[in-house]
Length: 320
Ligand code: M6R
Image (cartoon, rainbow, N blue to C red; front, side, top):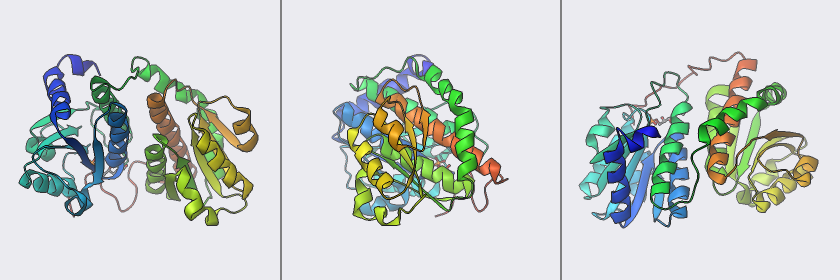
């Protein structure tokens, strides 16, 4: 964050000014970076800006962009082939291109009119973890400058506080190690986090997982809930997610709540509670993700899996 008022100040100001000038913002990304961009949409909406995000590989068919659109690519490597292809298309439509990257001088950075770096340091493991956190922090900082009222001062301390729950998370991981399916539900800004935790469960813990909007459960997935089905519920003060979680509980689901709320209803319905010290929505998204990352790490460890190098996956996906 410090770089945004020092070494990267010019680029940061330019991105913010481009966002303010554009008719709309369209993020484009893949995998974990897509989940960060979903949060970016949420934050920019809170700042009163028009924004959406699209998966890079489907960009050509789902994007409606023109010269007044600012396309923001979010990428750790800056080399994801689907993303490069999407940006070529965006450029052919006359859109301006901005990017949020980790790897400097990468192809995406070179294709951009303006690019800002998350400065997360080299990320060697296949799973994107620290890059996600830093992407989200950068997107928060951008949204704050666009008018989102959010306090970023205590974020790093708050993130460290998640490790107070490490013992509890380890216990839960032990109990989940043989699970075949895990569902993660969230609403609002917890929805991208639910998707991100699910991706990590698949990628490093080799567990089938679905991260979804709490409100969508009753439209189909609830049929899959049986006695003992694990459901991780991300509860950040939204009362509707509590009702969604109760619906799961009523069908015998095993509830693991990740929450910053002190609420008797949550304690009563949850089989396990991981409490995080998030003081606002923005920090909830980061702290809940870190709790999820730790959980997936410990499940993978229980199963003796190659955490840094999961099978069939590459760090940088340079094929279509
Ligand atoms: O380098 P990128 O951020 O463009 O990569 C996008 C995805 O390939 C990447 O996030 C992938 O989903 C990660 N392995 C997830 O942990």
